[in-house]
Each structure stands twice: as structure tokens, then as C-alpha cells.
Length: 353
Image (cartoon, rainbow, N blue to C red):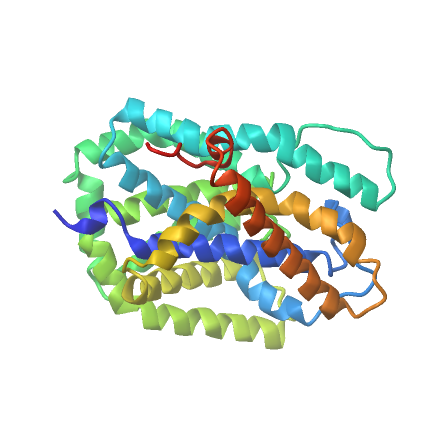
């Protein structure tokens, strides 16, 4: 039996990197004109040039997170029955989501009210953990289908897809649902994922594709190896064209196709270079989820003191990132990691289990 059936280190690395990038992204958002409209602390001066890089990341940062979540369901199902799967997802997804809704989100909002000098209140909210609700619903809805497919690995769908992706450009068949979603829903702002119909449908597509990808086993990984260079060239070319001719704006179907190519390229290069164990990965894989859950109220708190400083926006951005990562890691190391009663609230297993 191939080892990747139970675990792939490249997928763990993607998860670590994407959640880490999201923390940087959230810090950067406080230095953009749209920050106040999404109730984030907003600096007076902006870091517009960083938007050039962020517009590249923005179109795949959340979709690939949903995609690797679907992959994770496949791996978890290899050693669990359906009851164990439900129990595992309750601990991993639902409990941190509930804790975030009742405490992390309200604490974040509280600091936001302080920043904008609004009347203080404490109200339940998911804030940056909105995607956990999506993943929980996708899991509950799709588990029967995933179990059916798992018990019939030689089903017609998988057999046909294995034949198609064995072709040189066959993997592009999976681009079709992304393009159809972009055409039908036609979101005005493609990276607006949170609590939008576009975000829900796109997340469902990515989650399902992730599960199907790894279900195809070596057919999928071999297809990635053959196509990774091509998809990287396509993705980067589309981005440069968007940058030079459309000032980074583009029709939804254009961005959907660019996003798909970025995700396939990332999966392909990760499979080639990151699919190996390491002590660093072991530590970061355990730490990144609790740190991501925790970082948002910490960012809002330090924004109260850093954003008013009489210095450049870039210096304040660096200070904010250092404080967020530094304090988040400190709390993780000193409290969350060591306290058994805290670990489940942040999606971690109890020590000794």
C-alpha cells in the first residue's frame, strides 16, 4: 500500500504555508483602503504597491485551502469508519468553530470597536474563521457520497477520469466546474469568498475536487508531474497580462482559469519538492492551526497601539507582523500546547492520545 494513502507531507506543507500567508495577508489588509469596510483596523497611509503581489495570491489563497481540506477527508477516511470520521471532524472543525464563534470572534470585534471608538458590545461572530462553517457543511453534506466512492474505487467516474488525466492536458477537465461557476454566478469581485454565494459554490467545487484528486491516486500525481511546468507558465502569463493590460482587474472567467492554473502548479511543485518528512514540518503542522485561530484578535489588539504611531506604513506593517507572529507563537508554546483543556478548543488532540 502506498504511503500517500495515509499521509502526504506536501499537502501538510501547503496547509502550513497557506495559513501562514493568510496571516500576512490580514496584516497587509489594514494598510489598504478597503480595511474599514470589512471592519478591520485601517492605517491612514496605504501600502498600495504590495497589492500587486497580493492580487496574485488573493485568487487562490482560499480556494486551495478548501481543496486540501477535501484531500484531508480522503486521507482521514483510510483509517476511520463513518462514525469515527464524524467524531474526528467534530473535534477538528466544529469545536474550534464554536469556540471561535463564542470567544475569538467576539474578542476580535471588541478590539475593533475600541479602535473605531464605537459602543462596546460582545456578540458572537466567526470573523476570520468563517471558512470552518463552509468546511463543516461540505463535510456533512458530502460524506455519504465520499463513503460511496471510497467503497467503490473502480467506479465508472474514477475510471473515466483516470483515463482522461493520463492525457497530456487531461487534467484541465477539472477546470470546467471553475469556469462554469464563474460564468453562472459571475462575481463582481472574485476574491470575495466569505459569506458569498460565489464563495460557497467555489469552496464546494474545490473541496470536492480535492477529494477526487487524491482518490485517483498515482494517476493524479503523475498528471501533476507532467503538467506542473506548463500550468506555472500559463498562470504567470495570465497574471502578467492582467497586471499590464487590465490593472489587475479581469472578468471572473479569466481569473477562475488563472486561479486553477496556480493551484495545479502549486500542487505539482509541492509534490515534487515537499513530499518528505521533517521535524520542522511536524512542529509547524501542529502549531499553524491554533496560531491561525488566535492571530486575529492579537492583530486587532496591537493595531490599537501600532497604527497610530508617527512612522511609515511599511515600518508599522513590519511591527504588526512581528507582534502578531511573536505573541501568537508565545501563547501557543506557553499555554495552548501545554494545557489539555485548551488543546481541543484549537483543534488539537489531547496529549497522550
